[in-house]
Length: 343
Image 1 (cartoon, rainbow, N blue to C red):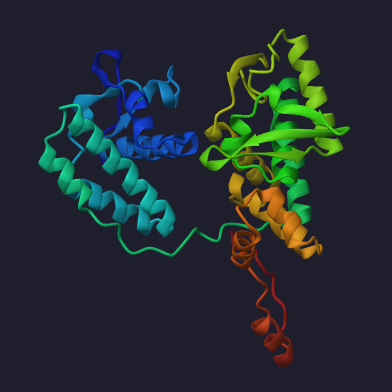
Image 2: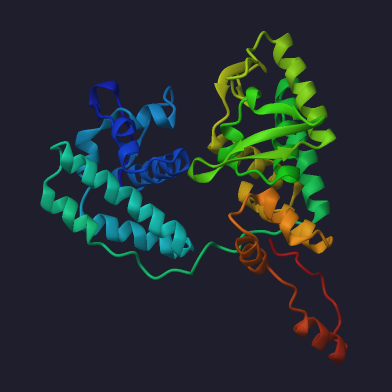
């Protein structure tokens, strides 16, 4: 593994943020590419962005010289193999490859990388991996409640508690993707036919209106009052959820998708339910509704899938009870030891 290098202002030079929209028009795709490129730079070039920069700012001033040393087919092939060894699914590895191949192509167009190296990286095929997405976690309703409580308990200030409560409550009831919550604005909230609704900006420039439950409205109202008391702007175009500075001051900057990831992960560890990712909450909402007998078409509308068939495939991938071994142990009358005490 290369030694970690913190990029300095003098080393910055390639504006990926300016040219990537020509290849990946969706903001969701751009953010996903940024995450994989950031990971590649750290893994293969030992390169870390300055702490003062957001990821998007860093992508607008990528350090060319350290980057070029990692841009070749053997290193890309080795990196993709490492991702497969970590258990990343086929979809994730394919997206990771596309991110780096696109970066190589754009560097070649800009004259930084020889065309033959870019072409060689484009010829790298992804390694064998599991089809589709990893199964992930499917949390029970009790585990969702525990996570929501822990999201408040891990807060280090009153404002952080209110912010975390909004994040956890919206994820655990409205099945939002973390990117969707990160880009939500106060202006996306409105009333339609005497119902509180949120306009959700989803994948591929699609948007949908989702009813906002009363507990979520309550959490949002408390958060809104705290923002006003802190002189934080709540104009329609401003972010719904924000970063919190040390001391509890509310930032004008929106909470990033990675920030949402950390809240969920830390809350899950605090609750003692192990590793949980934000998408696990979306999956768990769908699973809980399905088990409760909610019709698939209603679940499909909440998840904002293109059609019910997509939702049915999504639900079919949820971990299902397979109790044959448990029934057999009952037939054999095996004694029960201390189960699941080996984390």
